[in-house]
Each structure stands twice: as structure tokens, then as C-alpha cells.
Amino acid sequence: MKPDLFEAPDYYNIDDLLTEEHKLIREAARAWVKRDVSPIIEEAAQNAEFPKSIIPGLAEIGAFGPYIPEQYGGAGLDQISYGLIMQEIERGDSGVRSTASVQSSLVMYPIWKYGTEAQRNKYLPKLAAGEWMGSFGLTEPDHGSNPAGMVTNFKDKGDHYLLNGAKLWISNSPFCDVAVVWAKNEEGRIHGLIVERGMEGFSTPETHNKWSLRASATGELIFQDVKVPKENLLPNKSGLGAPLGCLDSARYGIAWGAIGAAMDCYDTALRYSKERIQFGKPIGAFQLQQKKLAEMITEITKAQLLALRLGQLKNEDKATSAQISMAKRNNVDMALKIAREARQMLGGMGITGEYPIMRHMMNLESVITYEGTHDIHLLITGLDVTGFNAFK
Image 1 (cartoon, rainbow, N blue to C red):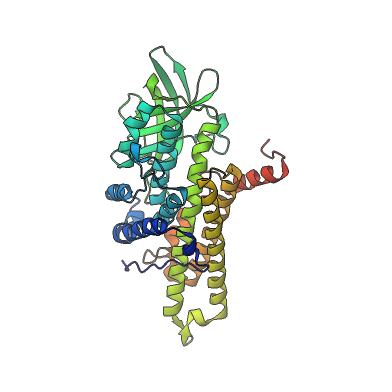
Image 2: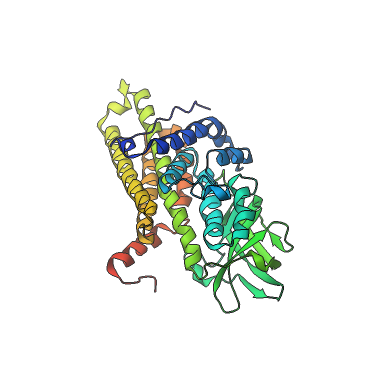
């Protein structure tokens, strides 16, 4: 394994727009990735195993619920801090960032925003500390981009709810301790339920043979007459807007995270271009290679500015769902294109585990699809600017 020599590009001096706290938080996350993720991630990806040994470290750098108030075990940080942490983690690996995103935005966020005080006190401190890991059940085998069509349901049985159905493509599911599950009641209204491992009829089979996110655990959530205590219903928001609010937070984190993957590919390609000699000189001295690198740093810089402004809007509680969709779509697409160009610059070496580029490229093929596909986010922007709903 090569030493992690990563140096983050900052072509427009964006660091000048960050606070000292932002930079300290980012540097702590960056140092942790270099020390604890980079040395093991290639082997984990090759073996298709999630390295559970990193969970305590994720908790220590504040990756689990960084914006959750301190009274519930979170770090009480702002949204830019959250973004910077996600950027650094995805610089290491998209699958590791997925684990943190799910825990923060899809499990802790709904319990904090939609749950009772008792639920917050029971679950959030353990989730923030990494003692419990969570998953988020929305996508179903037959309902991905149209979650409103879900068939997972629960019935009121007097002293409990009876939950039936299945969820697919669920990060963290194989080892989760709790799952925030979205299901329809008898009137067809969508609600969130907290399901705990050990409840009879609840199982979490793992999904195998993935070419992408190989260092992340993916699986199913299956409910066969699961008795869920009534106090496990999230009471403060229902309807499709509830899970979509969680997805806004996750998509925001992805918009930052994808920059990290792009920066790692760019840094690798730039370093390689100065070392690889062909036709008597470094390949970085050739026009076509300079074109690739110049376009990479341009697109990364644009994405950095997009994410930073979105973070400012999030801090002011002014960011719209459509604005978040634009950033997620643009930044992931940018990162995937940079990964592909960087892979070409490295030639055959680009497909080996000696360099991170092919792993990033495969991971980003999933990131461009989950939390809203590339095309769905395009239509969200189209709806926002025209007022016409192309989904129906």
C-alpha cells in the first residue's frame, strides 16, 4: 500500500471563507482518514467487507450526527462542518461516507426532528457514540424513484403495530441495531417506525456480488409480522415529506462528499503526471494531459463553491430541496467524470488497487444513483424552474 500523500486542492483560496473551527474539524477528519482508512480500504474493497474497526473512529471525529445538539450526544456543529467531514470521509471511500451519512441524516436526523423526547434520549446518544448503528428503510424491490408506491405497511393491533413488507438496497442493514422504517398505515399514510434488532420476524440479509461500494455493507430489511411497540412510532411528521426531509440532509452531505472523491482522483492523477516518464519527459508536460488536469481543477473549484454556498443557506435554514438536488447531481456527476479521466491518465495502473481511482469510479456509479438518481434530480430542477411536473 502506497503512503497517503494526499494534498487537497484549493485553487480559489476557499479556505479563506472558512472559520478556524471549520478548518480544525476538517483537518481532524483528514488526519483520521490518512491514519485509519487509507491503509486498510483497498483490502476491504477487494474482500467486499465493511471494516467495522473504523466505527469508533467515525464517532470520535464527530461523523455521527455532527449537527445533532450536544444534549443528545451530537457535536452541535453547523452544516458546513458536517459537509467538510463528509468530504474528507469520501476522500477515503464513498462506502465509508455512506455509513456515516445513513447514521447521521437518515437515522439520527428523523429521530431528532420527528421523534419524542424519550426516543431522542434513548437512541441518539448511543448512535452518536457508534454503540448502536442504524439503517434507513425507504426503497423497496419495486419502488425506488417512486417511494409513494411503497407496499410495506403496519396495522394497529391495540397494544402494538404489526409491520409487514421489505426494503432493498439498505446501507448498514446487515449489522444495524436499529432501523428507521417508512411504512403505510391502514389509511395509506406514510409514517416512520423505529425497528430494533431482535424483534421477532425482523431480518437483514446481506446483498452480495456488488461491483460498487464494496467496502460498505448493503442488504435488505424484511418484516414478517413484526410487533413494533407503539412508542416506536415517530409522531411529529408523517406523509412522504418526512422521509424526503431526511433525504435532503443526506443529499446535502453527498454534495460535499463527492468533492472528496474527485479531489483524491485529481491529486492522484496530478502526482502521477509528474512522475510517469514517456517519450523522454513527464506525461504532465504534454498538452492533452494538462487539458485533463486543468478541467479537473476547474470543475472541483466550481463544485466547492456550490457546496459552500449551499452550506451557508443550510445554516440560515434557507436551502430548498431543489437547490440541494442541483448540488447533489452536479457534484456527483463531476466526480464521476474526473474519476474516469484520471483513470485514463494512469493507463493500466489506473485499474489496479495500487491506486484509489478505479475504486472511486465504481463507488460513484452507485452514488450517482442513490438518494435520487441523476435523472430524477434533473427533473426536480426542471419542475422548480418551469412549474411543470414531469413526474406525472
